[in-house]
Each structure stands twice: as structure tokens, then as C-alpha cells.
Amino acid sequence: MNITLCVVVPTERLDRFLADQLALSRTQAGRLIADKRVSARGKALRASTILERGAEVTVQFPPDEPPPRTYAPAHAELRFVYEDEHLAVLDKPAGLVVHPGPGHWDDTLVNVLVGRGTALSAGSTAGRPGIVHRLDRDTSGLLVVAKSDLAHRRLAGAIERRQVKRVYAALVWGHLRKSPVDIEAPIARHPKERKRMTVAEGGRHAVTHAALVARFAHADLLRVRLGTGRTHQIRVHLAHIGCPIVGDREYTFGGSRRVTPSARLEAERLEALAPRQLLHAAALSFAHPVTGVPLSLTSEWPEDSRPALAEAAGDANLLAQRNPLQYLGFFASDDSSRDS
Image 1: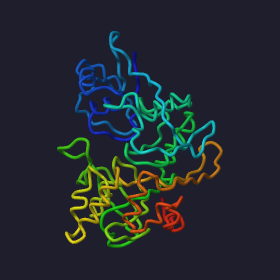
Image 2 (image 1 turned 180 degrees about the vertical axis):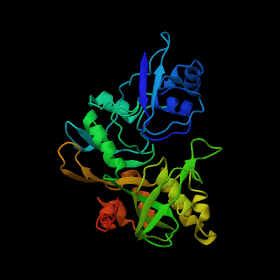
Image 3 (image 1 turned 90 degrees about the vertical axis):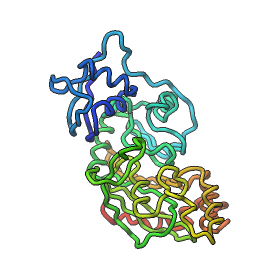
């Protein structure tokens, strides 16, 4: 059995690329490469090969080797904010991994969509049917899924041309020095901790736009817009400028300990109420890839994080608000006139 993969974005090494795209272990990927079963333009590749955008990689599975796994159906409650025969936009809950991978083969969003009977595009990379863009496991909010190959290609192209606007709400430690701010800093994989990313010379170009919505005693509520879409981009960039996301276990760099000792107890209460990184994909707008009709969708601050927002604001009324982001002016002050 042969499978051909197309590289949509450059990756670091061939072995990592195969493991990620085909839902294989690194050992399985390395064995295929060592056996000269992975090639490009008829030439066998090494594990250390750096892949370029647009490259086509062919993988030949031996007869006794099972092909990449199918997607076992799973069941979980999902809330869809838009759906037709071409695409669906859902409000992803925190804790749900988007596509299968190591440690999460059968309990991802893809598995839930399969269990629901949702049609999914083949996708541009194996192992990610229907997935046009991703959200981290513990990031909640709006995510678009393609049902047809045509919708997938056009949506992917629109994202690459920055014609899809993705706006996030983030509660961060500290205060922005100025607002709005454009964060432009290259992002690369951490040299020692492979599951983390970091700002580093030679990394991939990355741009994030952030603006203040509300200033609280120890934290700011920000509106964050992606200029590029790198792994962990918002979390890495906000930490880089000294405003890490409240509840982020990977990039908080001190959390409540950053706050002056006289106010440490207040900060610790806030931290204790954060069940995860307080980052939420709150707005998504784009032209429908088939009909061309403009779509503009929003999602309110999730219930699991409302106690933390109320604690940060020092306003118990936020717990009773059905629309806390609207109450705080998040959508009314959207800076959508800036380039996306």
C-alpha cells in the first residue's frame, strides 16, 4: 500500500513529519525510512531530511504492515454554531484534542465527528480529515471543519491569504505597556523540551495582534488576532512580552508568583479558579468557500472559566451575566478595520 503526502507547511525532519501525519510512533516512522520505503521524486529520503513546502512524499507500506489506523467513532456533546453540506463551525470545548496522535488515538474531535456521522474532507494531510485549522487541547472556542475537498482547499487557501479572521479572548497576567500592540517574533520548537515552542532566531515568522479590552488589578482581558498560525503562537507571544495567559501550565513562567507579595493571596485565588489556560476563540469570520456569503460567528466566554474572570475583574456580577464578553465590551470594540 502506497500513500502520498503533500507538505503544506515546512517541517523540521522527515521522521517527525511522518509520525505526525500518519499517526505513527517515531519508531515505526524511523523503520519505514531505514527500509528506504519513504521517497520523493523516486529518491529514498533520510530521517533528517528537511521538507519544503509543496514537496510530495511517498510512503510504501510493506505487505505485513497495517496501513494507518482508521478513525474509531467516539461520542461527546458538541455545539455547532453553523453547519451546511460544505462545512461546519463548532464551539470546541476545552480538553478535546482536535485530531488523532500519540496518546489520543480514539478520543479526538475527528473521532467524535466520525461517531456523529459527519462527512469530512480527505484533508491536505493524512490523519486530519476535515481539519482546516487547529486549537490546542485546552483552548476552547470556534473551529471550522470542512466536509468537502472543495471547501477544504478554498478554506485553506483563504487562511494562507489571511482572509479568515480569527479573534481570541485571553486573560493574561500583568498589563500591556501599550495597546494595541503587534508582536512579531519568530517561533521555533524548544531545543530541549520538544512539546513546547519558544521565540528563537531562525524560527518561523509569526505575528500576533493584541489589544486591551479591560484592565483589572492583576490581569488584563485582551482581544488577540492572529496574523499567522504557528503552533502555540498566542501563548508563546504573550509570554514573550511579559503577559502570559492565566492558567497556562506551559508558558505562565511564575503565574501568581509574579504578583507583588502584598497582593499574592488575591493572585493565588485567581490562579486557583483557572481550570486551564484562559484562552478562547471568540470570533471567526470568513467568506463561505462555496457560496461566497460572508459568515461572522461569535462565541461567549465559556462557563468553566467564568469564576476566574469574575475574580480577576473583582465583579461578582459577571457570574450572573449570560454574555460576559459582551458585557465587558469585547465585541463592541473589535478592531476589525485593521488588516487581518
